[in-house]
Length: 353
Image (cartoon, rainbow, N blue to C red; front, side, top):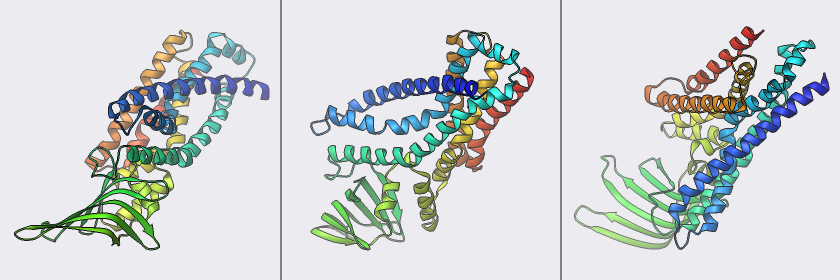
């Protein structure tokens, strides 16, 4: 039985790895084509290639559940096409045993996904974003394409990029009074964290008086703000590119500042529940092999897997933002599509016996 489990698991795992490679390759190709539009004298083709390669782990992490679905349909489906599953069933191997044999390599895949999402993808994404911002000259002016906005107290802050060593590039600050009148606007090319505060470099500040404006240039300026380099590495990245630990810390920071943290709660639940989502899609794939797709061609299985995968992603991408707009729980938005897949898988497996 151990050899049988190993044979089934190997067939499914190799198919999933092959599908993952194809999906990530295609996604990276489209990302490369999209990024080529930003080419300039400072942002070269080598920079574009480096950016696409460094962001590949995030694409792999995002596509892992769908790759597991399609790979399982192909791997287990090839065994069904060769009548190997029929022979196993005739020899007394139960459906539950075959399901467990498929799920064993899935546990390894889920663990790999957790490690990629928590450690590899956030680190490479941070380096990719910082390198791109540096190549595009993000220390020269406020960037409209990249960077992020943040509010703390009466200040609205825009940061173009955060370097891996914690240095900020292109820090723009707008300070308002209680009546929301603009008091000053300043731009600093760089900022470095020193003990408990930031040191801004090459600062140009425009002060708005009642009848005129005044421009003040200073080589250095102290900036007291509760944003640490670790927190800023979280702030400048999209929620889905962050680690669970980074999301958790930033969620509580936003709560302390009285700001909305719904997007980050949604990202937390997507990451925490990804192993369950993967297992639900794999269970659905297994049930299809024993049910509707038992005797169809490889092309039909691939088409079905792609169709279900895209339908699942669309449902997840619609329910997530909908939970933020209509106020229902992000946990429900993540669980609903996966729960439907899991229930459909159980039902089809029970029908198949």
